Length: 129
Figure: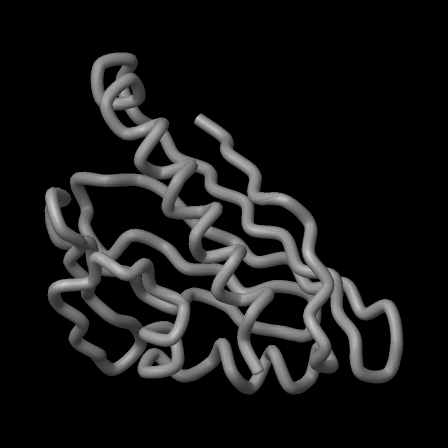
């Protein structure tokens, strides 16, 4: 299952975004309003949203072209990637991409909430100062 967020322009250099996305505690800024729990870990974070199970993510790879988060649970196989495309000295095009391997039943249950989550992350990153 692949989902995409809309492409946005962030008024930060890709270097600034890379530094921001390396630190687990910074991801709290981008979480949806229904956030009920947020815990940082050595290389990632765990969060809980209203009406959803808690999700643990690890920061797998961050460079000036992308930030890749992977599921920290062995029972779920997915990644969330933010592509970073510099378009100027202080502007970067960002797009969220979700890739997951789910059975058809799970896919049916999670597809809409996941797309909403990606859309919210995109909106929060776009509004980030």
